Length: 345
Image 1 (cartoon, rainbow, N blue to C red):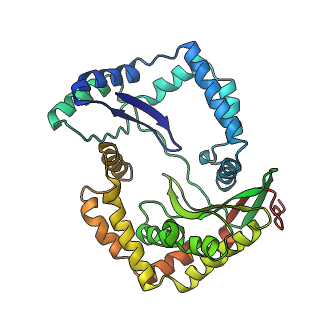
Image 2: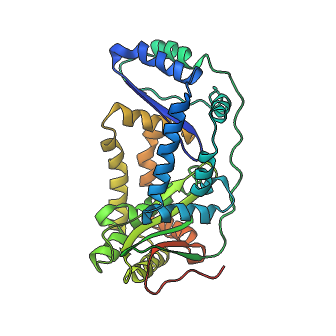
Image 3: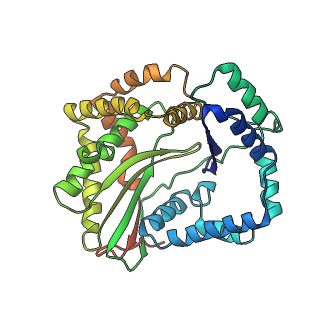
């Protein structure tokens, strides 16, 4: 069996996978991990050293620095800013009793969401879930993160690094998962930079001009915020041109919308790619879990294709005008870009 736990900006989550013959033992180990977690001094110290080493390595990678700086810049003092320097300092001062106290605070049944897939019936699953989670306190619902106020002006920030290629992140406020314009934004983002070699950004930045090996765009929804993020990397002497081309590509989509064939291809891909991705029990469980986290209705999978198919060209133009705004773009460049400098504070 394998048991993994992790934390994201919005939640603590985990996965449990085992053979059917080991089902009872697997759920018993899950119960012990949740209700009687061991935080031995040597294990805590080992994990602390691993996390700090990982943060130190990330600080040497331009793409990681760009990502961290982007989050710190667009979210500023919001908890989503995820400042790695603060994390490193907290890790250095962390004590075993701090870990135990945090575990007792977050390991309860409040806001518990479970998805299960495999060789098990409803009655057996209920029994095993009761065994694993029933020992935990009921708890109270955790407070949501505070509301986020997006930056209201464009900003360019250059982080100097002695590397031949600059990493770039460009972000604008996006739409949350419950926004009525979600599917229009979903299709628009795919046309812009989510379609691999068929996306507009790939065509303009790589195919026509050879400015980057890869370029992509996608929505990042969080519980209390959302971003539309463009990612690429380009030679220092060409990165300024790459950023200009990205800007002009967004402007054309904003003014002209999507061509009918382009729109049809995007919808076909987005509808067909989901069933292709469900190639394992884990991927199916992940989808079912995500549906619950996002508050989607039980018939979502029956309706998803129609919701995507219903996006029209005018919807793409409208949402592009709402999201692809030059006056709201935060641009982070890490490297030694020629012709680019940070905006004055």
